[in-house]
Length: 371
Image 1: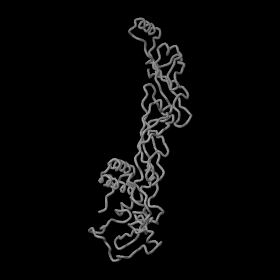
Image 2: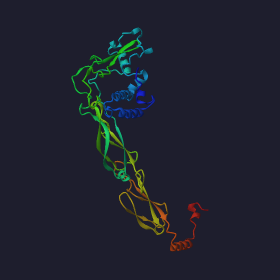
Image 3: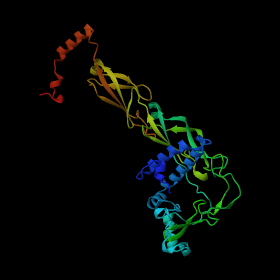
Image 4: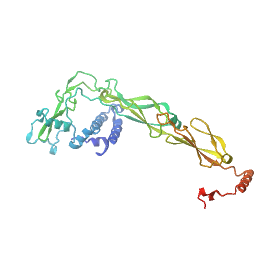
């Protein structure tokens, strides 16, 4: 009976590529032979998972599988009632049409093609996603750091080829022809041999160190530079530090997703920094020069006479740099007026004198909505 690849990966038939990849990586880590030494069932399960992912991750193969229930040669007994259905044209070989339209049609449907020069195709490795938490100041200024991660690299024993050497010999499944003959109903046609990929040759036994996969797990320390201006959700790309490609293929990339910690003083909005600074009643009334914090150290601003609580002052180019660029945003200082200590009798007396002198009601002023 044909395998249900969706059931193998534990996904729904409507699952997208991202869900399929996520399920595959989870299962592959769980059943990887290196993590289950000597466990034959884990090894078999790992191969089954790889087989399912190879089909469902390829749009063309997945479409063929969804339509016909198999990729390449159909499973034995695929006809009605578990029997091979032959019909009235049994033995008629449509591959005799050579390069004609019949063979072209069947090869496009069932995955066949001309024999290739090698048994396995080299392809680019998968990208790696790594989440990094950094401090607020590191995000603003940028930082050089190191991370430790696990990635798949080419097996040193077989140079990523997956084989342990041996002499080249004819593929035993297709007898060196590179073609597999398929009986489907009353039609018989050929496709590329699934065992040798159409090459017609095989290259010895599987490498014992990587179990024929060509890749092994490796823990690696990677130097990364986080540029100034990153924020939560930013992604930093490190080329060629993803998983190595199968059969000596190029590696994928490493993508670092940034999470920035909050700051006790500053609040960020894009490239702008915001900070609240308290001022006294005399400073707000008479004006003053005060020192305020910035990411570059203390800076002095002038508070004009009559400053109100909540008023903001701009410090140009004291904010955050554009990610990867030199231009900087601005910093904004919001002042809040702090009343004097009411328990002091002298302060209370001065406030009463001020009340008599001022004598106004700011809630009745036109700009505050009073009548």
